[in-house]
Length: 254
Image (spheres, rainbow, N blue to C red):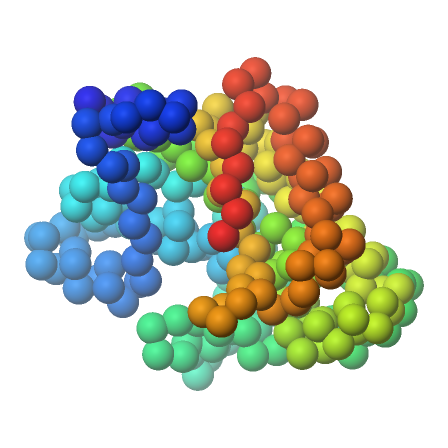
């Protein structure tokens, strides 16, 4: 079987020749792996939300990946900027700093927000901004015939929201049902819907929803809170994406 056939067979609940593989790696591991394999150039997406899932195809397909990830990148007019001291800022106005093997958020643009008006005044990114899907289009053209293509919709609602204000503030104010929290969630949801529609229209084979809501010990919020605040919103994201897809993609949660 080709990698694409293997993945689609498994998604159709039939048995492929082997278990399909979709591994992702950090930039540090990619650099070491490229040196070991003698690969001098590889894809590194400008996408703080999805970088690890939509980069390094040259390395990972050689190592046995059956899936190539594509997603939204920074647009042409707002690339991620190096601001020195191993720190970066992106189009969301989030500041990141390199910490060990990862780049972590250290400053949150809406950390002081308390009102719906403050959320509405923020310049949220446009999912249709020019250049956002140039890399996705290139990768689909290059890999889509032989490999399954996963559209990455990282940080769909939960993560995307707390990235803007900080996790502690987000969890506290969500519990207190502060009105601005739900406006923030709706803004992040709207962006995710825009990205999901675009990826579905580009013909990806399935879409990955990425919202880490758990730890090794259990959920970060109660199941009742998930049902109350997130279930319907995620249903809306999935339903909106399906409108434009002739062959509805399979959504996975993480």
